[in-house]
Length: 160
Image 1 (cartoon, helix red, strand yellow):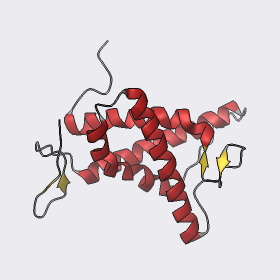
Image 2 (cartoon, rainbow, N blue to C red):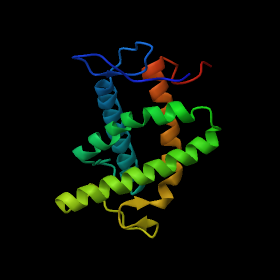
Image 3 (spheres, rainbow, N blue to C red):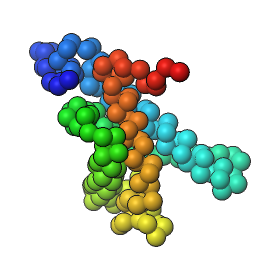
Image 4 (tube, one colour):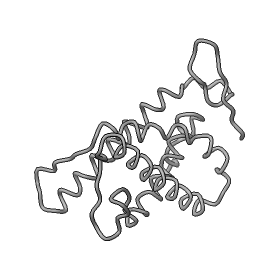
């Protein structure tokens, strides 16, 4: 299925051309919110594993914009959806590493700080952590499913 963008005067861009009414800006908000929730869960679990029962979480409002910008990659998913899942997972890992590095570099260049600073031995310039590759692999595949659910109304999870 090949999707296309349609512009309607006075409206947002609708995706796909089939007339789905879930506008890009709404999906931007959904992706940003889900990304933040996942990040809160991730940092809360990190606190738990460190023995901190307060389960404090942290993030940055910049992350809402960064996760939300995944809406601009939907057309890439529509073009690579027929690739084997393993290849797509590796592809999304590389894309997420690139997006994380570039967005962190951009924010650091403009404001002098990035929302994150990685310091372990797998970190590159404090902006990406190579040991997060498995997380990005599965997160990329999850956001594919989310995209299909939001745009094409496909079930997020198979029926049992």
